[in-house]
Length: 482
Image (cartoon, rainbow, N blue to C red; front, side, top):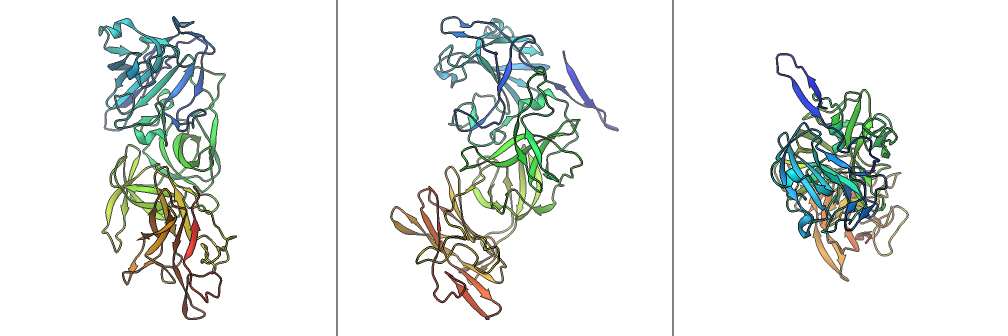
């Protein structure tokens, strides 16, 4: 049955969309065995769709699933654009169908036991909501019963099994699937507020982040939307969609289950009386906890653009427009470059991977923290991603603290020079005021930097300090976890 939701706007035509039907026939034993965007149990990465299990149906190598559970088209009209038969080229998805729905949205049904004969023969190329497309199975990698019997359902913006150019694990992405062109299928089973626009939101209290809006799945009243993590009070996040009953689809930075790597978690939270930021509004980007500093790559253009800079937690930024989950920001001019437009999303957050904090005083080196503040916060930080590591040197008052624009990293049993990029002004072609960062080798074990602090009480510079006297200047050392 078609379920339509329309909004009549004054002096305009109605804005409508059709709510998707559940893909598995009612009355069958079924349960969502893995949600969209959840971190894999067996495979590291975020799940690109939802898995709907059969509730214990067996799969036999010769005959397939012991119970033939029909899989139905979920949208009000779909055009068949690709049929993938079980074989070496199925990339682990087995018997699959990819259909196109309403413009750039594509739907993938995978691991099918069989595909409808009329679809296979090319007699049925346009599907209506509820049309049978095949039967639930466990096919994959050329094997009829490769997996337990289930349906893997994806909604995405490309018509291939994997994102164009993607060579990673099928059905899993290293970071949130939305930045690779996937969409949360759950959103299409609910009435959304079509007037809501993507926004940056600040949480006014701690809220649960769940795998879907509301408490239950559409046709599985005994299964609830599990909690994924928490949105912390005061934390910023990106709100993508909103249901009519106050559930927001959001993306937040989070620590992966390994505890040593940052990622982005998509989910749903029930938030009332929020005040989304407006385009062009400047605010302090706050994503960390307990003083953590988290870096977010700023790219030349979305997805594959070169990294131009980094936005750091507590840094003020201004968003100018949105494009498919990516936000365009205004990069301010520096001594090295002019002002320019660039793009950020929820990708490439870096975890802290430094070894030393205010408890450490490396022998023969200056300390990696601020000796002249009561908090003794870190000034030499290290952030590690999958393929890139960065050093970030945090300055205080740019008029009272300068960072030398060159340092060294310890790689393969030797020191190698690194050049810092200034986040503020470059003084006398040698000193950075404010913050500075540099890319490190993935093999870096240590790096050193040199910071000078102006003492207003003593009227002199104190540089490379190992203690508050700073009688002897040292290179200041930070270790990088490997």
